[in-house]
Amino acid sequence: MTLEYSKILASILFATTAIFTQLTQASTDDKQSIVYANETAIVFKTMDGKTTDAFEGFIQVPENRSKLDSRLISVKYVRFPATGNSKGSPIIYLSGGPGGSGIMTAKYPRFRFPLFMALREFGDVIALDQRGTGASKSAAKCISSQTLPMTKVLTQSQVTQLYQSAANECVDYWQKEGVDVNGYTTLESAEDINALRKHFKADKVTLWGISYGSHLALASLKSMQGKIDKIVIASAEGLNQTVKFPAQTDAYFGRLQQAINTQPDAAQLYPNITTLMHRVHQQLTEQPLLVQVPQKEGAAVDFLFQKYHMQILASAMIADPQRGVSQLLALYQELDSGSEVGLIKVLSRGYFNDNTISFELMSFAMDIASGITETRLAQVNQQAKTSLLGTALNFPMPHLNKAVKGLDLGDDFRTYPKSDVPTLLLTGTLDGRTYIDSQKAATKGLSNLTQVMVVNAGHNLFMSSPKVTAVIKTFLADEKINTKEIIIKLPSFVPRTKTAS
Image (cartoon, rainbow, N blue to C red; front, side):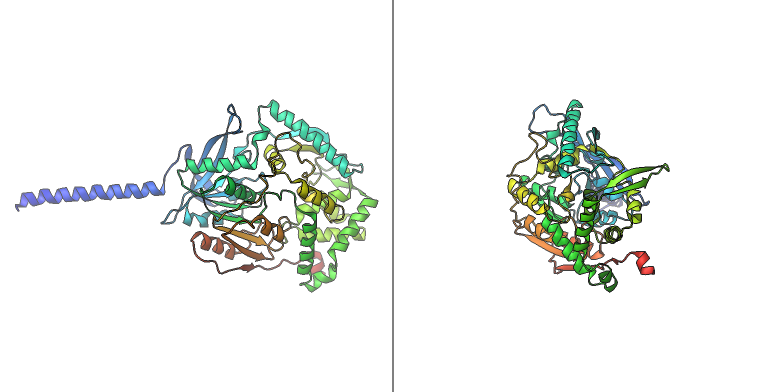
């Protein structure tokens, strides 16, 4: 071999190696930074200043797939690219509500952003704004002409009538705006998920949801058979559980009392919360409280505080023991003792200030579409007569049950899914919105289910403990979960002022 030939051969080998290296690097880069149609690279920033590279994108879908001439609406998302070596199926986050924004969930300060980032180890993580929500909002809020009197006693039937009249107004309003109200159902959202799967050119997707997001995931199990890889859900709401059983809410207060009894000071302060609540409700029924509520601009408005206002407040405050429960208990005790100071402080935050009945399309329509079976409705109405919160927990359902013609999805939709898709269910033992027994019923047809109880946790349990993240990662890694329960610390149920004294 001559020196010249050696030089030529070496040059060829070097060039070939360089080309191969470039091709390999390009292939690796492409895998890590695939850009799908309708996507734009962004720097995603949370409300507390955390940033990461991401892509925002959208798909266009029919508003109502049952109509050939349906208008197209945009369903938007933010995609956080996978960081792991073995990229799995896209993980689509499904917000609760209905009406929550997946994109905003990732943005909220000190909330779920770390979990979004942690799950990138297993695939692209998609913060989805479901149809009609957040960046995917496709209709203006409807403000009806119906108002709730601020200083008159209202019966439940009167409230129901006002809300039904407002619903009729709003359906007419949206239709005049070119909106197809009957397109806003859980089944249509499930079809959107399938369209998103195709958009990402994925054989399957993994669904990760909470509360109504679990409701959507369970519906997707039925409509996307063979297209779902895994499911991670928390605080599960079954397909016939849009309206919760009032008796199960009463049972929750029994569990809450047991938790209170583990704290001697709290147990002395609240020896029987059920009796306390019933007593306050009776007082408000016999003598509603006319109070003056300070406004931001400095004035005050008269407001007649009634039993159903108290029930709605309680329904809003019992979701998580770590948040509003201690304040709620203190409010009941103050009202029982004749004091209105705590009530005025709560009302000053804006509860019941706007007495005009208004609706957001998505949350309005989705609950009505999912509906309730006649058998369950009869049970709910019977239990509500004597239960602590009546039908307040899911207000304005069942008051608006079948309020929109043709929107109800029917009893076939409300049957529970049967599936062998690997599913992880996380259940808080002190969840004040979706209950232990109801979550078991919602998932009874899932033959490949792993349930982990998060003891002392409430409804919003994903960030209640680092162990929750660890369990989810173990599940997504296809490893065996040996943990059957995660125990977190109970908050103090004694108000701070009582502790200080």
